[in-house]
Length: 257
Image 1 (cartoon, rainbow, N blue to C red):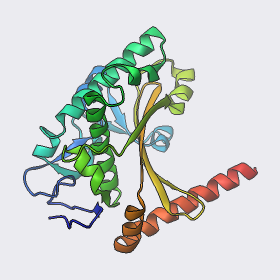
Image 2 (image 1 turned 90 degrees about the vertical axis):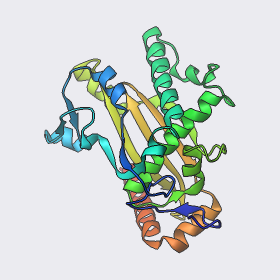
Image 3 (image 1 turned 60 degrees about the vertical axis):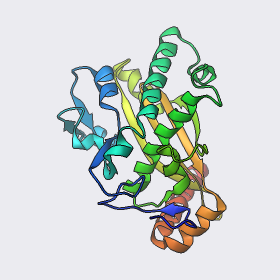
Image 4 (image 1 turned 45 degrees about the horizontal axis):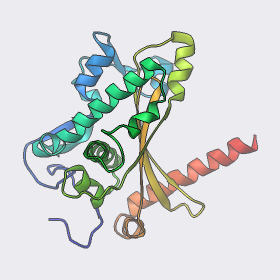
């Protein structure tokens, strides 16, 4: 069992990354199979980074259930079904709402003003649980400890909202569409952790993209989480601060040119 005073955890196989229990373990899809089938139809699916696609080395996914479309870290069957299905259903509803807004030429951010996803609604709460589950997967797959408040929120053990969410334009799709026109497009931008001048982590951010839109979501670390990361997980802390430093140096170099 997780120590009550701990605010981070790092469950590893053969334990579920969300609840820490052993049992029948599965791997979460990075993109829901039903969504990929609806967006891409019978088209072939290729998986890879932007560099892979540019170099022509992207991998062919044999189906929407391909291992290349799944996270590595395991989730137990209960956490991947009944505990998180309400959030998955709200994610489906969000995508349908965004598709409708696109077809009408309406502002996509207006979907969050709808009755279903308004602040304080059950729909918005469960939608955020879906993205909490995805962020937990990204943290686990990059060997970063997971905030306990994030995993307990994802599986309905807590109603304390810890994520923010927004919608923006996807620059990669915009660039591609100038050549290829409108086309099916799906992207996970992975996990990024940003910090300030002291290089200490400030927030974690992920983004999921379909077509021209990014759905991005982020979590600010508490002071307790920052302290525990530094004290109990020095390797992860060092990796994160090294990445923050590298990103800062890159931005400083880019701004000077």
